[in-house]
Amino acid sequence: MKTADAPKQPPPQQSAPPIAPTLPPARWWGRFVMEGNPPEPRFVLRWSRLLLAALVLVVVGYLGLASALWGYYSLYRKIPNVAWVDVVVLPRFSRVQAAVGAHHFEHAKKLWEQRDYVQSIMTARAALQKAPANLDARLFISRCWQQTGRPDEAVRVLRDGVSFHASDERFQKALIETCLATGRYRELLEVLRRDLPARNVRLLSGPSATDFQLAEVRAVLETAGVEEAEKAAAAHAGFADKSVSAPLLARIDWEQGRREPALAKLAAARAKDIRDPGIHDAYVDTLLRLGKADEARAAAAVFLKEFSNMPMAQLRFLEAHGSRRGADATPWMNECVRFLLQYQRVPAAMERLAILSGPQGWSDLAFLLYQNSLQENMTGFPFAIYYAASLVKAGNYREADLVWRDLSVRNSAQLSSASYVATMIAAGLGKESEAMQLVERLQRETVSEPRRRQNLAQVFQDFGFPKIAAEFTKAP
Image (cartoon, rainbow, N blue to C red; front, side, top):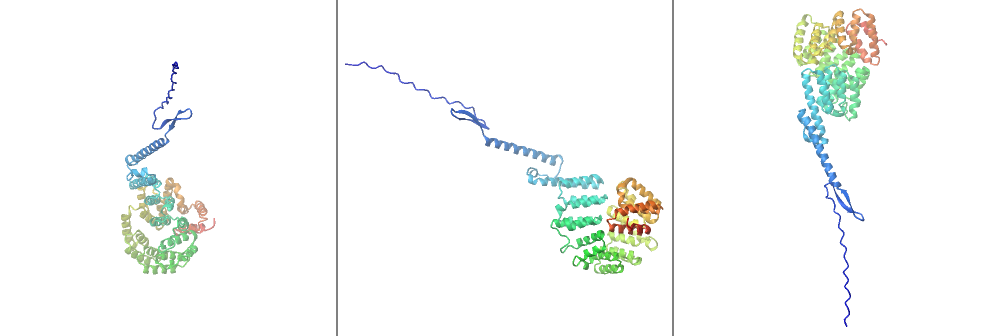
């Protein structure tokens, strides 16, 4: 018996798989990811790409700015020797500064040749600020300060260069010579005994130390007196045995009253080393101070024969024939004209001739040099001082007073260094009260500088004012 078939059950329905959500398209700086339960989309930054992009922007920006700076220097300002790589690579940027400094320096030299002195000095200072290690620029601006009557600035510029050029022989020589030429003896001692040794540079010892030892002994003589100078000379082994030391040692002997031994020492050194101009110069000077006029003329002639084109020899020859009378007239005139023609465009030589004209009383020559200096600057300083001094020596006090008053109008701030001239002018005009006031002021100024006081007293004596010299040496 057949049973009825059971009704068929429909198959169970299968559920459709879930549809994954669609993620937004990715960007170069980030993308979406599914995270969480239930999963949800989250945006994730691509930090590596962002950092790389930032780095590229910084590099491109830096290179753009560096290129713009290079274009400014090289194309706009037309400064030579400025390389693009020197602008881009920071450790090499000092080369750019050096190139800018060299450009300023060349411009400063051209301005000086064009007699635009103020602008030249300002440009040279800018060159030194850009490239403080530029020795040529430093020496140039120092010479400029000297020629414009600013010795303090000349020495300061050089002393500021010790940290850059302490071991450079050219710098050392320039620094010492500038201190000597400008009378900055205390600064010279500080340089030799403190500044340079601090940089492990000891110029007072070694086989080539003689010139520096001479400078030190002279500085000690000018600042501390003859006894200390003698000790300083004795401290250097073999110093007294060298011919080049004879002029300074003879000066020490002279100031200690040993005058004939001083002359003998110079005569022996002259016979031993005939080619040393310093010995000739000191020998002629000592003969003149001893009043041995004929011997001085003969020695000056030998000096001039050995060094015919040296200003020092020519000036000593002129001094030895300084009477300008009789047999002295023609040799003096011939050599003076030769000197003027040879050095008319050398300010330092002209100034040395003017300095000699003062104590010699050569008012005509001093006036010529003063007028010539007016073409170089509008004040005539300091040649007007030498002209006034020559008038004092010649006894023409009224003219000296007029020159001094004219100078005071234009250079009142600079006359403090030569107030002794005003003192002699006042004394020569019979203004005793004014002269004594100036003497008292000089006494106060030199109370801590016995050497300067001694030198000024000698000036008063040489110019024919023994009363003022005696009063000046008294305590204020």
